[in-house]
Image 1 (cartoon, rainbow, N blue to C red):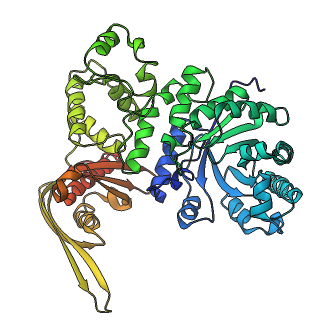
Image 2: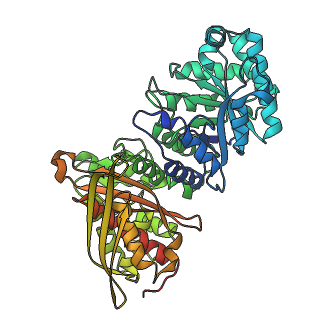
Image 3: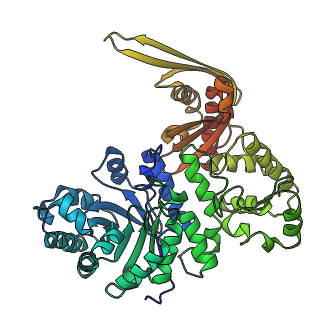
Length: 532
């Protein structure tokens, strides 16, 4: 059993999470999530499977620049009958030029016999060859032992021979996978202790699925038995019932079990924020009852509980909610959340005295706007503008008088059915009145193009700005076509900066313009532009 107190965190949200029903990450989503995970302090971020699909290929061609985490590519061991040098899957894996690679291989004799249909010894050779080859190509190789616990129950000797081969070939981590999620905590504990007699715990990892609602418990049981790496996903995303939820595992390790995860107190306070960033990227409401980070995780209704909490919070709160970036909520009278807002100020470089006379009004304004439907967890640029406009002076770079957007669906000269969007804007820049017309591949793109025609002459800083993602969420679906719509726009520029803005309206084009206006203003403010 390992005596090392350091637990290494491996996030597979961008691959395992993408297998969740209804989840479809864009390249922009993957980039934003990877950066959030890196900022949180995760040790390994698995980007996906190079060669498996166009999205992963595009992501690996232009990976995000990470400050801490090892950017990891996922693939499989060499195929039967091929050498490591002549396997296209391995070639794609290493051509992606990751910091580390994670290879999955069979460890259940049943799968070797029925799925691969090869001698069992050949499968062990495939594992050993692939890991040794990977060790020569990149600095760090991990081995995911697929269906390990089923394999161990069927034939401990064979399952052990597979993981020992990976370890002896140079795998930094041998990760035991509960692939169908059917193993229980007491079994995990016993088997991990057995395996640790052959592979040191400092090289053992655990990868659990949640089919019996035990993925978090199984992961913690594995650590207690000696494993020192945990693989999981943000918010427990994953196929079927999901994967082990790192959002719960991290605070359990740090606050309950006393382990070092590489995260400090400041990073742990970002946990709720990062959890909600993921949900906003997926355009779905956060789970209110999620442990630690849910809106109701520390909510108390009127009556005995409220009285007890006010006298001694520990009565009904197992940890201080501020330690994970959440807050106590008394349902009949929400707390102000002052510390959370001030922490957000520090993130964007605003050192504001908590006693500043304008802070209370800003707190109320944020609460009012979030009640209306604004979401600032995934729209940091809009939050910064709101804060700076409340506490400082932000220039008014232009004034919009009106805009009009037309969509025309027609047959073109080649007999193709096309839809063309056209936008007209009337704008004041300084003392000059402008009108511009532009087309686009959609109403938002047309609006952006029309505004660009007007603003570029006065603000050349906008030349390298581009829209990279656009999401729409209906907040009041019961109201049909009159529902309130929230639009999230992500923009980027030539300085490799990305920022997100939010707009809200019953009119989708109006909501889009509101987000677009924030995006333009944020770019100009960050570049130090002066109002014309």
